[in-house]
Image 1 (cartoon, rainbow, N blue to C red):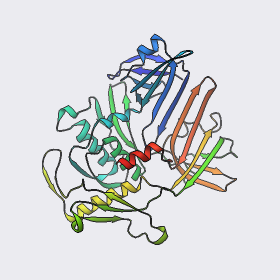
Image 2 (image 1 turned 180 degrees about the vertical axis):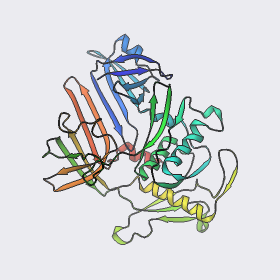
Image 3 (image 1 turned 30 degrees about the vertical axis):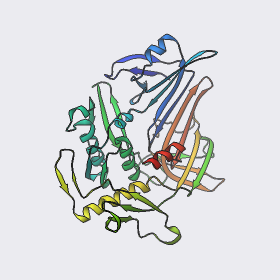
Image 4 (image 1 turned 45 degrees about the vertical axis):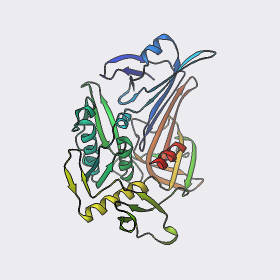
Length: 368
């Protein structure tokens, strides 16, 4: 494996091809990252500076921004690098004031990026060389609103609710970054348009499987409280038709959403009662997307078996996963791919189904 190193103007500065250890995480539902350990010699210390961009030589679109360096000098000198996905650029922007957009999920997400990072009313908020991709026509409609949200987190909330994802891609030839909304292809056994991808030990393309299913964190009804005080506060319940033992409620404080507000251009907007209730309902559904039923197969994939990652299947694709011992077959998305390279060789870990929330994920959710 080779990593190219670029500056923020997308000039290539060098190559790293000798690693002590490297782990590349790509996720469909949250931020990915590279964790890289190399020898801490003057050349690598000079090349791998904060603010530099890393890209695999065979995948120049998906890139990573060096934010953390740690130099360790014990028996040998090592340089430890952590570089989150370039999507982290949008963590540097907030939704300025209350903002609301309706339309396809693709165009709604692009509208939030447009007014907060690409063409904001305050030119100091613009991210240089960031453009928005052409529409691909994902046929999902939504209405979304937020106030003061961190932009990257807000985009993942919308994306997770509608089973899509987003990326900031590098266009090295044109010296640009492209914001794109996308959805993986269906390659499962349930369809016939694309070649089918099926993972199981019987097919000898899986080395190890770890299956988890849990409802311990699951919620399916959101009681959303908007503007007003006491008995006059506006309340909307998302999924109120669910009842009895099947009903698991969560409270959502949406006081930040107001029916009368000023947009990013300081123009006053007044929503009808129906429009305001729809916004609150969508906020509730976004919150429920953070509390799914967990059903996941964590699998180590045989790199040399039938089906090659990056050629026959990709992150976000819907595939089929079987375990004949459990009598289970899942038709589900690839939600994360973790590629590890060290002196012992290369491994590929693919997770299918729901992401199990980490401790950090739960803390961030509680803070929000």
